[in-house]
Every structure is written in structure tokens, then in C-alpha cells.
Amino acid sequence: MLRKCLFPVAGYGTRFLPATKVMPKEMLPILDKPLVQYGIEEAAEAGLNQICFVTGQAKRAIEDHFDRNMELDDHLAGTERANTLLSLNELITGCQFTYTRQAEQLGLGHAIKVGESLIGNEPFGVVLPDDFCIGNDVGVMSQLKSIFQEHQCTVIAVEEVPMDRTASYGIIHGHQISSSLYEVEKLVEKPAPESAPSNIAVIGRYILSPEVFGELATINKGVGGEYQLTDAISNLAQNSRVLALKFDGCRFDCGSLAGFVAATNYSFRCRFGTAPP
Image (cartoon, rainbow, N blue to C red; front, top):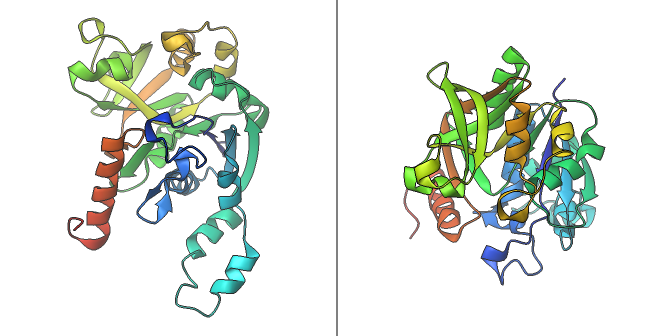
């Protein structure tokens, strides 16, 4: 039963300093909604309504955002702004939120391992809010869930990237089994273009089997001196099935200033039908 989604949000957000000195980077807004809320809406659309956060220092704003503020609700009641919190309050009511802390920043793999206490022994989703994803018909997590329900195995979201950008991503090695689906044999974290097995890159959406926690317990520090989730999934692929889905939609890297601005401009055009002034 797939019901939980893990959000690793403990990072410092150094590429957005000084804005992120006291504000979590996940709370940076795309138009009038923080990045992390888009991710939770995507998870909830897929039926993953038990939201588990791995947080760190200076992340209290995330907890406060996903809690009712009755004083503010009362203040807005009867005004023209009364409905501005309606969708957020519905999300708060429809989801359960739990939190744990990552004491040290030791990589995504370490953050996922810290989240084991919230997940337990069941399959779960992972959303990295930095990757702002828009599905063409349904959200990316809903697309991954459909593959998971059919095959009952780990499923990761991927997209093609320019070959000269492979050193910025986890890259899959495997074979294509349909127009959008790959059987993964192994993953390589941030390979140089000349040694990359493909240009099919992993992006921040996963559905993982609980066996990944065992693999995370055995890996050593990898690229960047951090524990890489890519390495654990690659090991998992040696003993069980791992599929990669080329999702239907678009994705913006909101961990970078350029990606964040592009996502904002795209969202503005979608809402107002024109480019930002």
C-alpha cells in the first residue's frame, strides 16, 4: 500500500543566499505558493497523503506553513482575501504531517536513511522540492504510481539531458522496454560526459521499495564525500527490479537561480496567458 511520501528538506540553500539565511529554500515562492507546497499537492494527487519531512536547522517555517493559523483565518473571514488560504487549508486537512531532523548534512542518501523512522517497512515516494515538475495530464508522482502498481518495484523519474550536462546528474545504465520505460541495470552519480553510460538523468521523483534502507546502510561515501541515494538504488538494481520512467511533462531545476526564474516565468504565462511584464 503506497501512502507515504518523504520530503528531504534539510539543505542550507546556499545558492540562494542571502535570501535563505533564515528562510528555507523550499519556502521560496513560485508566484504566490512556496515550492514545497507544489510538491505536496503532487504527492496528494497521487494518494500519498502521509507527508514525512526530514528537516534541519532553521526549517520551522515549513512546519508552521502546514499548520492551521486560526487567528489569520479569522482575520481574513468576510474579506476579499477570504479564499486565499482555502486550498492550503484543504491540503492541511487532507494530509498527515510528521517530522524528523537530519543532524548532519551528509547527502541525499543519508537524509533518506534518517527518514526510515517515519516510513517503516513499506514502499514510499520521495519528492525533492527543488525539482519543480508539471505533468501534462497528471502529476509526475501519479505517473510513477501507475508504473509501481503494475510492476510492484522501485520506479524513478528520468529525463534526457544534453550529454555535456551528465556531470550534474545521476545517470542510468540500462535498456529501453517501451517508449517511456527503461529497465535499470545500474546508476552512476555525476559521470563525466566521456564516461557516462547514457544521457538519461534521474530527477527528484522516486517510488522506492523499503529494501533501499538496507542498501543505504551499506554504502560508503561517494561523489562529493556524501552518501548518495544513486549508489543505493544502483545496488538495489543488482538484486531486484528498478524501472525508470521518462515522465510526461516538464521540469525546472529550482535549485538554481536560472531554473527558478524560468519556472516563475512559465507559471506566470500559464496563469495569465502572457509573459511577465
